Image 1 (tube, rainbow, N blue to C red):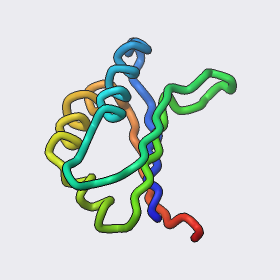
Image 2: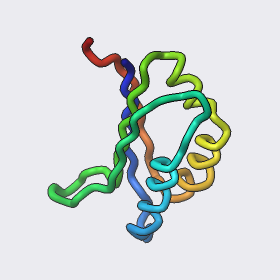
Image 3: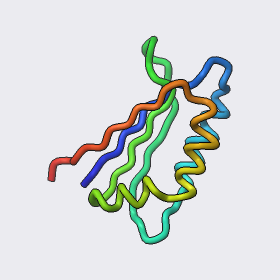
Length: 98
């Protein structure tokens, strides 16, 4: 199993509603023929200096991740909803223990 983790920081002036709208678009995303589990949320502000949002997506294998990563709607969401509001987006994919 592969876990994809994305952590982002939003620009000054970006509203919580804008962030939530972008995250909800990913929560609602369906990719034909692909099963994955996506969890996403905004930072609770419990510690100064945290990132603004995070999401994790679990896939059965590398190929499923690659299909998700190349999906046109997924890329539209990244390009149109996340890129304009984010000053930094970091990603990592790693294998979960079996």
